[in-house]
Image (cartoon, rainbow, N blue to C red):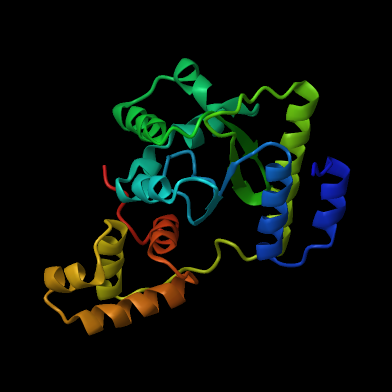
Length: 246
């Protein structure tokens, strides 16, 4: 069943927590033709290109292996979607990226990795907020779908994305102000988690017991407010706790 923009506005007004906001945003876009959705929110980098102070990332509908691989191989750091979105204001299709910008090797690898999973085309929508709290919302249409919204439909999708983004900002006024503090060992463990290593492998690498690694992992999850390894890597990267590599 299609959810209209006016219905979504009414729904958003009643939402008081970020989990419900994400569910409402997902349901709106899924009801309007999307099969995948990803939201990347961050405090924008300064002009000297330093990394964002903090970021949050949520995704649903994408192959789990794809998201994990993009972070494990640090391809997310050269994401051409975010790069192009930071320099444009109009939504664009993923398939148009090569014609809209000069790609570096890592960005070509990013798009190549996505192509391997045969998820079809998608639309990147820029969202903006106060104090440089910007982001992107990506909606994927699936391999069999042909995304061709007309100008009015495209504007509705853009307005819905901006609406959810501003609602997220309203619900998280202190975003970016809290700095996650970790011990040297916890950061080491997080680095290996981000590289896809299991607890037993991390124990061998660091020369400590697996029980000690388990304890560090639990503390890392608690400090980052996550429940799984992929999200820990994502949040750790956004919080500046991981070395993004060259």
